[in-house]
Length: 126
Image 1 (cartoon, rainbow, N blue to C red):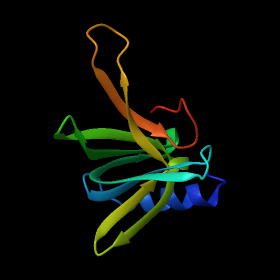
Image 2 (image 1 turned 45 degrees about the vertical axis):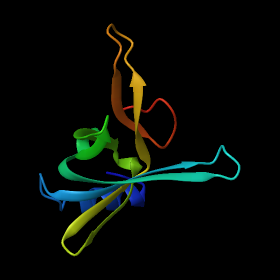
Image 3 (image 1 turned 135 degrees about the horizontal axis):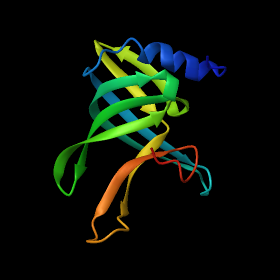
Image 4 (image 1 turned 120 degrees about the vertical axis):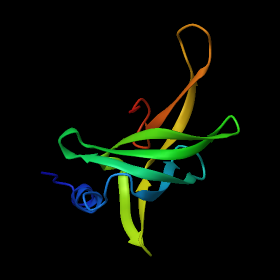
């Protein structure tokens, strides 16, 4: 189904992870627009929710610190953002080319929203 070998390999490996399995998630964004280019990395714990090949998405629940509290947030990433999947000592690791961002809510009452942003370009919120 997938012509990119990296995406095909990611889908095969992700399909071996059971729902609600603890995973170690790395969120990485490479910023080549700055001089010198930089990499932003976050390492988080979470749980694997599902691989949805027909919709090209992996769903994870990842624990973030938001306003000083540990909060489980859904991360729905396109399979092209999965740059690596591996298992060490019984623990699965998933590296995504993307990050979590907060933005002001545009409708009433202020507040902020939080969501996954693909590392492949702006505007790819999932």
